[in-house]
Image (cartoon, rainbow, N blue to C red; front, side, top):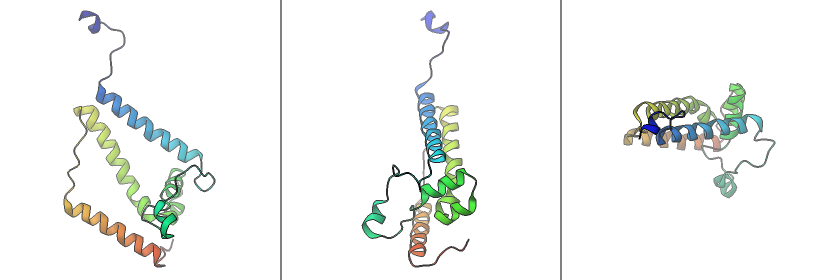
Length: 140
């Protein structure tokens, strides 16, 4: 047992490895989207809802909006998908908070979403999709 205590390289805890893995996946995704514009490359997934109905779902244009956000083009991001553009900072803060909690307290935080918040997000997404498909363009 004494050999482990004096080991030159301490072992990472499983939770630290999970956080490192998820952070690595996150930054690799950022690098891919930053370097390969979705409008020019066909390896990005297509929206199955749009393919079936030719209607824009609440997430359509999200990858292009994310690309524009990474290049600090807020106007272009709002053009492609205003909902993703507005929610991206909150998603980034949530991801950072989850990583902090996992490293500090050795567990991922629970996500106790009240039904009102879940219902509110669903309603906002539905209204956004209806507005996009009925010609109520967001003037930018």
